[in-house]
Image (cartoon, rainbow, N blue to C red):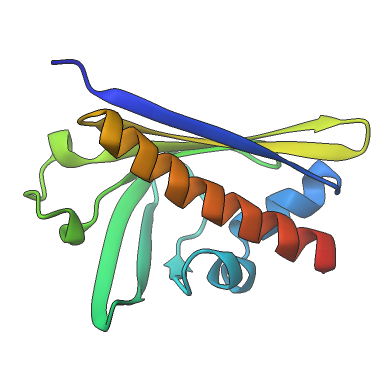
Length: 142
């Protein structure tokens, strides 16, 4: 069976450069991504890790930056041991962030692939919509 992809986006009242900063600044990310600490140098081929505590349990999720275009796009792989799946390539998701500026505001979109079913798509969209809403609030306040 083919794997599915969840995609969602939000309009942010700020220029693309400010949204990009929120997307790549560890302090900003921690503010809107469930209190997660992100570690990477934002270069193609570099590892990216996400650490924190979820429901009382410490976690360390990981991936690799597959491609990055400064200020507008990045594609990383993503794996979480909390998924209960084995740490092997076919269990990683591709997460792609894209920013498009339109009349001084920015459309931020994110997609995640390798989803098993429609329920998984809904759950992923719910999570990403929560993250996007938090990012929008952070960018528009700071």
